[in-house]
Image 1 (cartoon, rainbow, N blue to C red):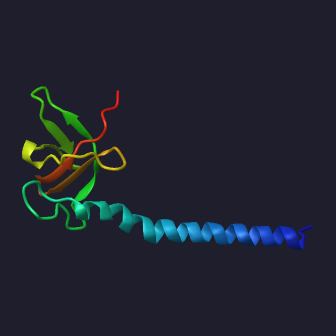
Image 2: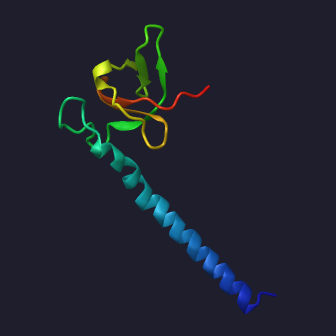
Image 3: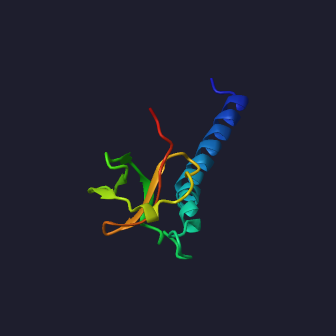
Length: 112
């Protein structure tokens, strides 16, 4: 038998879950991408981002000591002049690139 107190808790839980779902669907994607708008192509005042060219990425260092970043299709060699002088807040590598051209890159924390 469902009592009034159980139905009240169930309703509160459903409302909480619905509110959390709304937050995840609408608030998170925009705020997660906002970090890129502050990033500038090194040596310029030009933003690295145009709302669809930046993303977390896999990265590696070549035997020659150059960074390579995965753009979803291929490994791109990152020119040293495009490496940003900081680590992203989430500690991951991030790449801003258009058509295989690296605009900005920030290496993630080295994990062993």
